[in-house]
Length: 130
Image 1 (cartoon, rainbow, N blue to C red):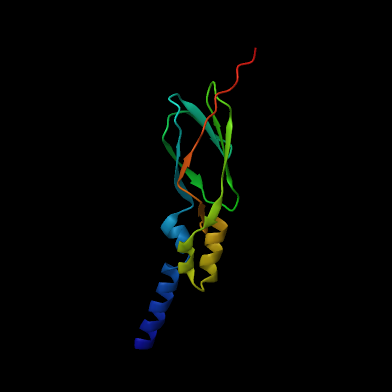
Image 2 (image 1 turned 45 degrees about the horizontal axis):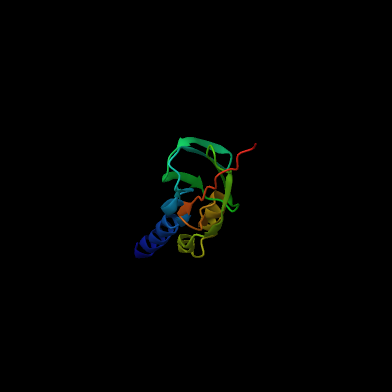
């Protein structure tokens, strides 16, 4: 019976520690954008529009291997493009030798995270066309 209990404990521990980054961090993360303009703006994040936002603005972005592309627009200002690069999410290390856990974390994108959680946007006044 002690041998069975040991095996059962090992199996339960393996299952509980599978896909650690997906379980502990999720497949989305909070990012804050900030700017010194006083008017509303529109952020397009990976094709999804966030209209009439004011700064600072916090939203969720998907974890993935590709950079997240953010287009920032405000009336009277030049359009600004930001690329949110991704870094390795060290929580994934908890998978150790669990190939299933690594596979789930890789497929879900949870092995990555945004390089930073705060991004300033420096809008430049657009030049008037005469």
